[in-house]
Amino acid sequence: MKLDGAVAIVTGSAAGLGAATAIRLAASGTKVAINYTKSEQEAKDVFSAIEAAGGEVVMAKGDVSDDDACKKIVQTVIDKWGRVDILINNAGTTQFADHDDLDALQAADFHRIYGVNVIGAYQMIRACAPYMKEQGAGSVVNVSSIAGVTGIGSSVAYAASKGALNTMTLSLARALAPEIRVNAVCPGFIGTRWFKDEFGENMFKSIVASQEESTPLKRAGTPEDIAATIVFFAGEGSDHITGEMLITDAGMHLGFAPLTAR
Image 1 (tube, rainbow, N blue to C red):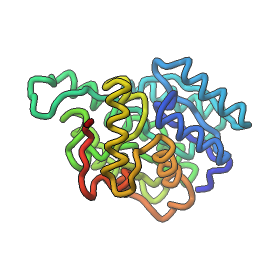
Image 2 (cartoon, one colour):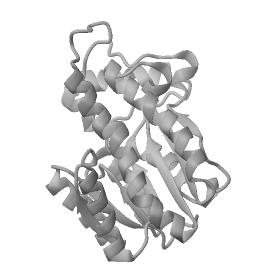
Image 3 (cartoon, one colour):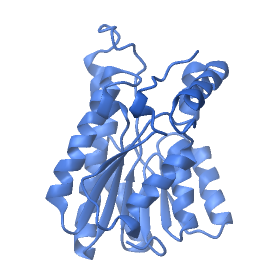
């Protein structure tokens, strides 16, 4: 699929990885819908950055865990451009909890995390699929995590949700072919405010230093690093790929350097 002139929805794109992905797509000539739930000012900042660079962009507010909101997000794009070619399921949430503390998570935590990370992605795909099928082509990229492959991460519920997202990627790659390709990107550490907000500036820097020391590529992942992989899966360079889950982590999984601060 050619990115120039295509139409993409990037969920959770007000900041971090979603914003980096939206900006990269727009730089490739893609028309982009910025989705957000609460971070309106940040979404406006991304909108302005894309518009200032000459890109075509629209804002589409909505919580992906709400099926009606998913339909409205897609309808906003259809009303604007008449089609949707690319869906990046980036919206995600978590609950930080030690994996060995079984009392740290309750059923409500699982429901909330699955509601966004798994059900939300499913609902967005379902809302987009009829248009992609009618067009004869579409590309879905699910933003998963190394947590879904290895069982690490911010909590058991988060890791389990990303594992579910990975298996859903396989299921829908089969079910929606041949018109729609469905792939997933499984990042390791990404240096976003997500980590800073949880751990603070000093520990964040420590985690970055640990990644730079321990990963085979001696790198700590940035939103731009992962956005490049997402855009690859969205575009024509991956037209022969579906049902793939690509770990993007500077090789962390090879020696399995844990996400810990020194």
